[in-house]
Image (cartoon, rainbow, N blue to C red):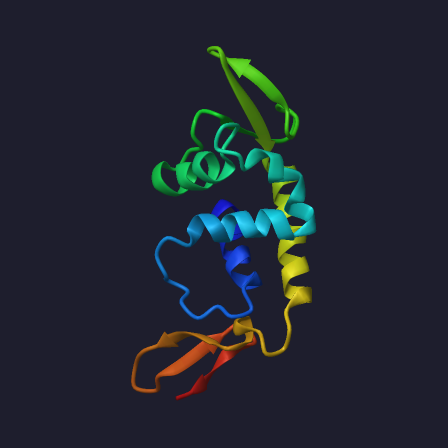
Length: 146
């Protein structure tokens, strides 16, 4: 979900051309949190002096398969969503996976329903090599000949 938030931020850019441009991950992640209604509750967690949601969650999970110290994850009957606590004299915040997933799912649906027909998400996205090479796009998931 943490890299998915970054992806949703890329989807919001109506002029997106370089899906692999370096140095855009943080701004894409931030844009998704700031613009998508179901993710806006996480805006206070973006601040680097606070919880640094991008660095602590997205980078922690992507680079080491665990969030950094300021973020904890729980499930089912464990700690509640967005519960703040102190451990080893440091402030932490908990993300309950089911609640976080519900917000992420709603964000995905919001982005899908918000896309304009000529948006970059409706253009070819991935080339599949081979004898019958074709392009795959979100608006054309079955592929088309090139």
